[in-house]
Length: 486
Image (cartoon, rainbow, N blue to C red):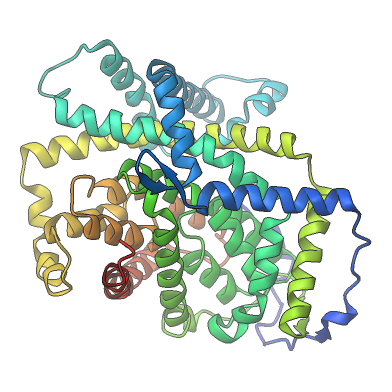
């Protein structure tokens, strides 16, 4: 497990607070910026921002360039997109099977092949192994149009395959190209550095935690966890700070929110949804870090404490500082074509890991929803709250939020046929839940076993987060609708 050795080596380290050094931004060693790294940073940053946030007119409506790209690709060859989705599902099922059999010592894979196939990436639980394998057979049956009629009904297939799988298989690898440009060529450093002055006063966290948060939002929660783990092992964070960062800021990333809005046909509202999501997440984080259980976690270190300096400077100096850090990262990073290729590969891997699970769970959930009243019973106690908050389709909203705690995509996209207000509300709430028991919760428990993060603690935090997210999101969504933004 990550960090277990550090805990043994430093178990006598005190949990007392350590006062950080104060430094002026003038004390920072600014790099000698050449025109090539500066241009690389600017081009990568503007390209990523343009694709995700710049409004364009397309086929009579305002949308974003990512939506236009997806439409053009599907118009060019829907068959190619479906075969690509099948390939991702098959790769996920096969590589997960090889990985599980190898690590369970059923088969032996050479070290070279283990590295080449990145088998560690595909390790999972028995449940999710089964879900990915089952998805291969479901995908083949859907494409061949063969299978039991009661399973492969038109509404179920249209939603699970046509809306969910196709969109996820396309938007995550495509979006990852531009997310990686932001994350690897300075955008992450630029945004994170600019946010540093607000982290300590608002969230009682070191300024460097802004980088972890930006990594989660621009890359993925797993990247955010990795950065947090790395700083934790070097004494840069204490246990309370790690728990707060992982459960308050490692929420859904830009690419996955984009995939969800694409499924719901809301990409034309993507900039507004992101704005509502970020504001909601920050408000909820500012509250949660000040109340139990987060406020009661001991401020203990597992390595020699290394608090960051508290930089002081004017707004202009901070912008200059952030620009310098962005260019520094771009100078050390890959070329734009190389970063784009790496982004696409990483996106395809991520899509391969989740799209099969999404297909299997979606089929099961949709069949249960279509043939039973199970979700109606579960959601019944929460429907009056949705009604009081003025959310249209209150039952759909309640079910989507409940599902979101288990699996983000299924919960967020459950409102696919609901009113726009309901759709935006469900996306904002589920995107901000942060603790998804199908993915992020097990990873947190595994990576931070020396804190420790336990499932019961994460469940309590999920309930608290959701209880805060619902009213805050409702107010903001209604305000956006009143302002004519939705």
